[in-house]
Image (cartoon, rainbow, N blue to C red; front, side, top):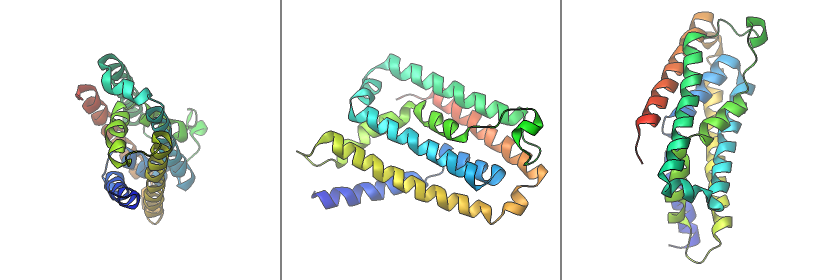
Length: 206
């Protein structure tokens, strides 16, 4: 395939991957609906920062270590599962009651950029995906590092566009989504999703 064909094929594949519902979608929807546009955007930026860091790891060979080392993969997998489970259990047991600042409820404010980024970095499947997926769209003879960053950049751009669409969709229903009972339900539902993803990650194989 030509360079243009490779870019078009990757963009289509990455678009399908981006819009497929998953943990990132759940995190962005919950954060923007309950805590507002700015926090939703911070979560989205964190998620995509995680993608960029994974892209850098793959470009410089660290992703290949995760792909070939069972021990490295398992360590990262169980750390990621434990982190997701911790987030989920906290949402299940301590759902927000209102949109008052977190400090007013006796707990520190959430750093959704960091949580979004760590959720991606501690998921070895993202690294495995990049290691196995990206090379298929790098034309023979082209610089590996430059193309890896370029393709990851396309994926991140698509992710940000999708995130902005999700955030905008929640804002149109903000009046309903920010009622106390709805906030509690969304926190608990998202917490359950996180716990289920944690279990799935912990029990998954390559």
